[in-house]
Image (cartoon, rainbow, N blue to C red):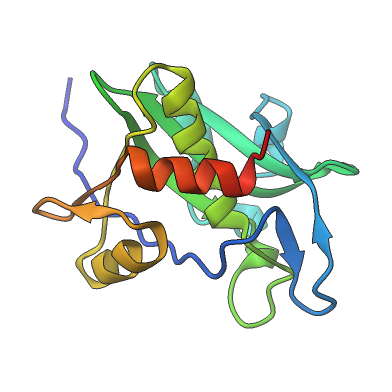
Length: 175
């Protein structure tokens, strides 16, 4: 089996919120993270301006893809996350905001922070103490250190450790 080339993730945390926040009104909306379904794959395509091939991630053995939606609007996907359990941590392979949540005219802030927090939550649930690893583009290492308190440990490899993960989970998923 051919090895996949490791490329760094290139996502920017716009704001850490308690849910997601409408950028125009400032209103917050409670969210839920659920597994992506086969039916969802019809809408999260490059043809619909999504950047990644989510069907490929969905079909990759050992990986799980999750969708972020607003509680009262579950049919509209706000963002996607691909996770895979490692030996002592969870690996975040991909994370993406919906096309309408990108750039200057985005509708909601906090989408990616919410999804990263969910990755940490899954890590706690799987017994990995919240540890979430990912590979970063070099230009974004300082951004992840500042916004997520992630630790850079070489070659673009980053980890959100237990303390940083607990902060994110408590912020987005209060008991």
